Length: 84
Image 1: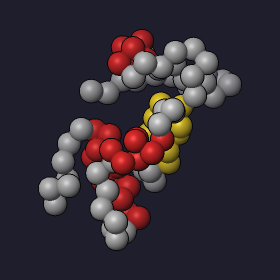
Image 2: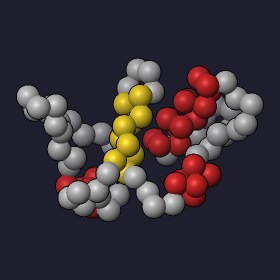
Image 3: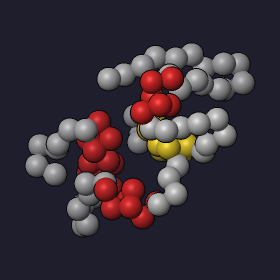
Image 4: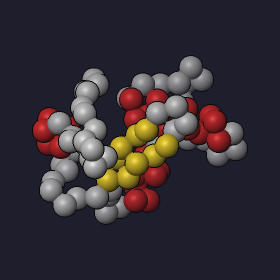
């Protein structure tokens, strides 16, 4: 599912209410912007960063490009061609 929004003159964006609710993002919460090369991922900050990192489907020894691809597929809720 994707959403569109407009960037304001000050560079601000508004997260749709349905996404804020789904990810429990409230006013004042922090988010992380991840530059994935050809697009940006916005991730809610979590109190348990280790748990979040462990949930990413990334194999050690993969190239940076492969890791970025696997993070993208994980975020999109799909599997990679290699079955990761």
